[in-house]
Image 1 (cartoon, rainbow, N blue to C red):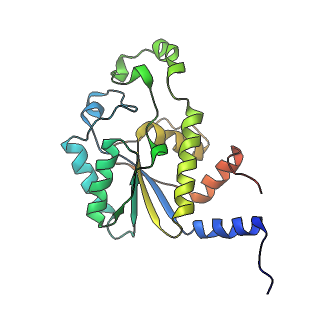
Image 2: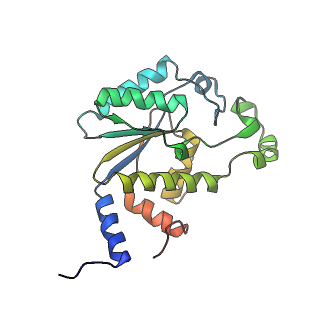
Length: 205
């Protein structure tokens, strides 16, 4: 029998295996800065007791759904959320994934969001990470996780602004609602692949 060498077919088979995988984004539990309405961005703020309780509760809710891998952004609030969920599920907690970190907000980090005017936010926009960069790195990281873990059900602990950008891009519309602490967003892997193709992020062979 002739050995199959066509790269397109090989890619297709790999993608078919990947489609057996399940993927969901989860926002970390609450922090004191969340409670105060402060913009966190890349600033490393720990969970508070409410956030820890949210993580444990979500872990209990997900029990029996066959999630078997938990990964997270390097920031401590995401890592602790991941550890608490993984402990409730008794599953693997893997190494940090750098590209699912929160959007960088530069000089706006630490500020109370309600006190930042639209004019000031516009002035500082050049010092914040742009939405396109966030979307591309998030989609790249999620795609790698799917490719490297075919057949697994993966929980990815990330952050509110980064998750909202991905959610809205997949939906094709800006959704007014934010992403709450402990919220889970299931990712349609076929739609994610289509979006990466639309953005020119899938390399043709």
